[in-house]
Image (cartoon, rainbow, N blue to C red; front, side):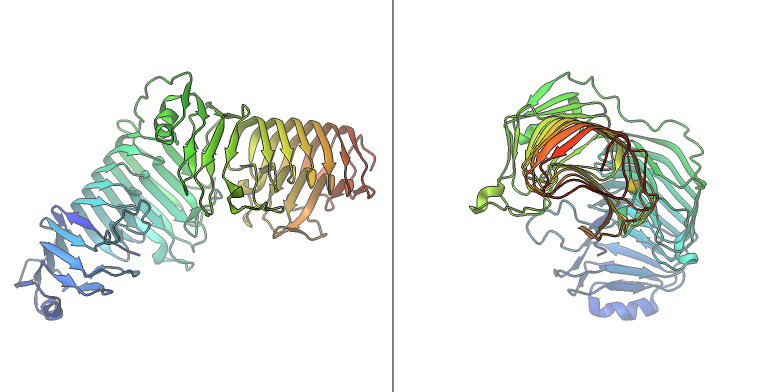
Length: 575
């Protein structure tokens, strides 16, 4: 949906516009078609467009178009676009006009109004957009294709910043090419991103070249001051960049600003062959110097969380209630610790969640006897097989420690999908699927399917389907699992498998046919002991060449109803 609720303070002008030949003013929609044919200097003033109608303006070569007063679209819910302008060497002027799609007719504000782009520019050449204010929830400017564009003196607020999004088609060629684009003297405030350049890795071949951002001011940026990514597919970042649309001569000059969050100021996800040049940083790309972190602070109200996240390196969240249908988003500062105390309760609602999301680098999360209560019992009965009620899902991170926590659920106590340098210690798990790795969440090969350097220590698993569960997905792309350690693990009342390692998962199920697409190396078990209430003590299903270098010691699982089964035998263990 291309929704424009924009105030044009001055002009959107093409360079070297042709002289005006004939002038006319149109104030009714019915008279527009005739005016487009006869006028080279067209003024559209205080005009109302019928509901579900695109205002199509096919201008004469070299014509000028001026919006005046308020151009209003009768309200309806539809895909749009509201307006489409075509022409060669045309000039479009705002003259303090307002284009009003009546997007607030619902009576509430859409805080995440996707595809409410200000200016989408494509399939054109020689366009200048200037002296305009855009207040929206998506891209202020989005360049998809074309050349020789100038964007100057723009003020953007509330959205996704000054963007290139290149690779809109699977076909190779001009549809995926952007070149010679300049953004200058622009301001971006209170937005997710300041500068965002992304190429689509599932598109055909193309290129981005000679793009310049100069004299750009940023403030209150929530996610990334500058983000350059070659990994977009279907509207999302995959973490696996491709070089199908190389980016060359990306020049930044005098780009300054401040961040409102703890996210990286600059994010670059690129291929090793990407020709990326950030040529001139004439001044600085710098976040504001934050005030010194408070050593410790305790938060007991939801409204106080945001400020505490910015100022505290040792944050305690105690006896706090989260509003219904709200995710408790905790973007921690690098190296910070987070402690839950008392009861953290979410007001009851039926929704997809998640209830909580924790982000950070080298952070520590402590339980301190706390309870995280999503009020899942509000229905009046217990779900004995509540799938996807995982305790801790950990992915796309590095250097995380989770300790001193109790999880009572019906799925994984811990599930590691991707990332490195994780520590899980002194956890007590009951009722679920145990201490798990589930690796291979995408068909693309690379970092999204890699787990390394993970340690579980001094943990207890009781009355659960599994104790230890390591599984790789045979329908995923290439990846690896390496340097994973379980030590001092106590198991009791395990129903299915005390220890299960499988390389055969597809679509959430075991197929019985393992594959070596994600090999498991150096899986270390030390002092893992426990009892079964049924099932099998140890089950190992490895593909040929899929498992290597597993040192096990002090492993003893008793009372299983079935004999152990192994297609690969670890050293120090007799299957």
